[in-house]
Every structure is written in structure tokens, then in C-alpha cells.
Length: 263
Image (cartoon, rainbow, N blue to C red):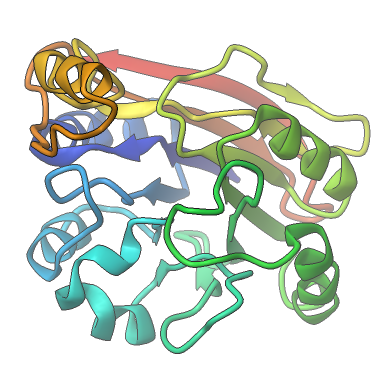
């Protein structure tokens, strides 16, 4: 089975990149399943109902969000009924779900799990419980339901992402990091057969400060955050992500390949 992970979709430029490149990537890599992070898909902050419907019209099988998922109330009803995930390990879980089972194009069940890190994430969105402990419990529930298990950890710290990947090695098919918007060059298959990358990168405007207009970002830094304007950049648009080939019988990754497509 060939799986495509799409890094954090940022604003309208990111959505344009997905619309442009997704059909091409599916054909080129014979993709059977697509998972995309959409935490910044609507103006860089969360995802609205309108944007969700736009992305749902594309061949995306599951979406993960992150700490910004609570900023757009129009998406809340869809968190209950659609394959769009908020972090599983939140301490307060009044709505939505953190994992789901989705059939691939081949009819193979795929378990998708979304987690939020804790290191440097204390003031970002809702508080999260221990992702290591949360995964131990969840795997007892889903391991018998799907061989292919995909995990997206939305987190700041490289060490936290890498540590959890080692902890889950051999128990999940692929573990990817999102949130930092800078694609890392450390893709690999861990000894137990888990595909890994610290961060998928960003699908959006790279002539920017991780998606934000450069002048706007500089003013925010120079005023210690007092300058509140938020403006999505427009130039240097590209799609970033990862393609993973996984064995349908064992659930182990066979190959991993970083993706970067310039618009």
C-alpha cells in the first residue's frame, strides 16, 4: 500500500498547491491512501466548514488538525461525523475524535491517529495528556482492527517526536511530525519497521516566516508580540510531505520518500 502524507496546509496558497499537485502525485506514486494536516488551512488558523468542504472534494481520505482546530467553530459538527481528527490525547474531550478507521482505495482498513505534544505546547490550544501513555491504551483497542496504523504528532520539540517514534517502533506503520512547518531531511525506517520523519514540512507559501507574511512576522517579533496583525504570505508556494510504502499484511514500512513540489 502506498500512502501520501501532506504537510501542514497553510491558507489559500497551500490549498491551491494541493489542488494542483494531488492528482499528479496520486498517479505518479500509485497512492492508495492520503492523509493531510489541515491545522492552518483557513487563513493560517484552523479550518472552517467552507474550507473543509473544499478539501473534502479532493481525494483526501483523512485529515488531522492540531492546536488551532478550536479557532473556527463552524468545523465543530464535522469533528463528530467526518474523518477529520482533533488530537486524541487532549485532557478535555468535549467534542470530536482523535482516531478513526478508514478504508483505503484497496479496501484495506487504515487506522489514523492524531496526537498533540506537550513540550513547549503548554499555551497552545487545549492541554494534552501524556502521548506515550495515551498510545499504549489506544493500540490495545485498534491493533486488532487494522495492520496499517498511521500517527501524526503535532508538536514543537524534535526530541519529543523522535522519542515517541522510537517508543512506537514496530507497533505502528508510520509516524510523522507536523506543526513546525519546516521539512526535515531525516526520513527513515526504524529497526522495527516504522516509517518516520520529524516534520513533514508545510504546504503553502515558503517566501515567509513559516507561512506568515515576512514584514508582519518581523513586526511581531520586534514588538514582543504586541503587533497582532496576522497575514498569510503569498509567494514561494510548494507542497511538502512524505510517501510511504507499507506492507498490507505486516503493517511494516518498506520505503519512505520525501516529497517537494514547487507551484
